[in-house]
Image 1 (cartoon, rainbow, N blue to C red):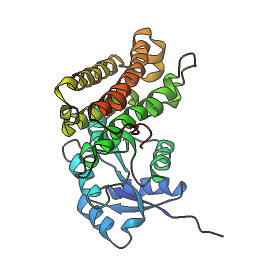
Image 2 (cartoon, rainbow, N blue to C red; image 1 turned 135 degrees about the vertical axis):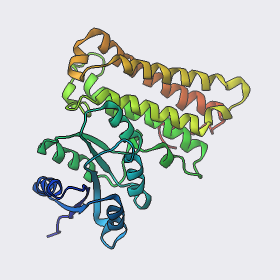
Image 3 (cartoon, rainbow, N blue to C red; image 1 turned 180 degrees about the vertical axis):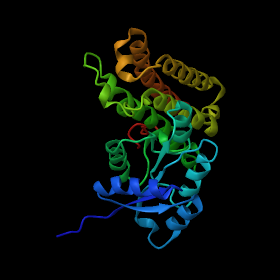
Image 4 (cartoon, rainbow, N blue to C red; image 1 turned 30 degrees about the vertical axis):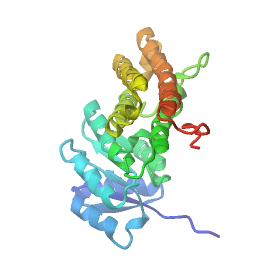
Length: 289
């Protein structure tokens, strides 16, 4: 009989008592916890002989000032390592900054045991974080082709629509399912979606891909940025947890508008931009061909 793969969690926490508490909860879900009292120790463990066995890392005391550097240090040798962060506040700014720095999940302290187990299950099965939680710096590798750049943007928009918005807003005529939303317990669902759009806009600007078109196609750049700005403004309208927002006509309208904008952005990026860049007739940014 094949042995079950050991799931190893790297826990960055200075307090030994907190490390024991997290380790006990993780153990009930089948995880072995490797504790580190500082980032230097954590990096050393990742670089050690058993570092490749670590399937996820958890930063137990997220700090807005040093947190991004901590994630960067963990990812230096393991660029695809899922990183969960825990903050002692429910600050939306902290959540957005953490996710834009590469975190794959954000928890508010104190964390209920079932929420921690849920986060470990969601992150432990994937060796590399997916979607727009990947920092722009990781996406912008030197050998990216035009097809890959356009495809990354188009797929990012598609991912936000299909995995972040539609599961809880629903398609036209469907009943909303607020508990299907990512981060619905913490109330960070829409701030996370807004961070997704911000990250893709940053990616667009950093790549300068829309500015590589001929003069008569420069409208694609201005139109795309305009629609991204519309998405950011629409997300700002939603100020309550999703269950309340879905019952409020103004906020529900903003959520529906976000879905419409994903369609507009997909057309601009996957069709108009691809054509403006002279990509081959057989190229489809949404099929990856």
